[in-house]
Image 1 (tube, rainbow, N blue to C red):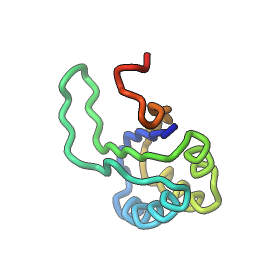
Image 2: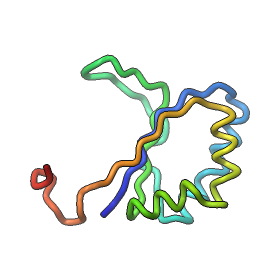
Image 3: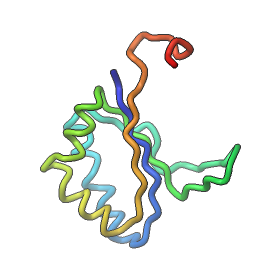
Length: 105
């Protein structure tokens, strides 16, 4: 079952964060992940949430996403991101492949 990481990032140090953006993608790819959203424009349609930068990653499984999160490949980039930004990060289990979206509760 796929897994998704939804990340809301507020950048505090743009220079360091730019370096992070170069380091992170190879580590994401090494664990089968891919970027679906990476900082594009957002529009609040309901509620008061007003994120500054949204990133959405897809991994093949929750386990692979966790392995990436704790990996030695991502550790240097993670430390750089944590030093240069304030982040909210959610790991969400996706629908089973081939399952119609309306079938899951």
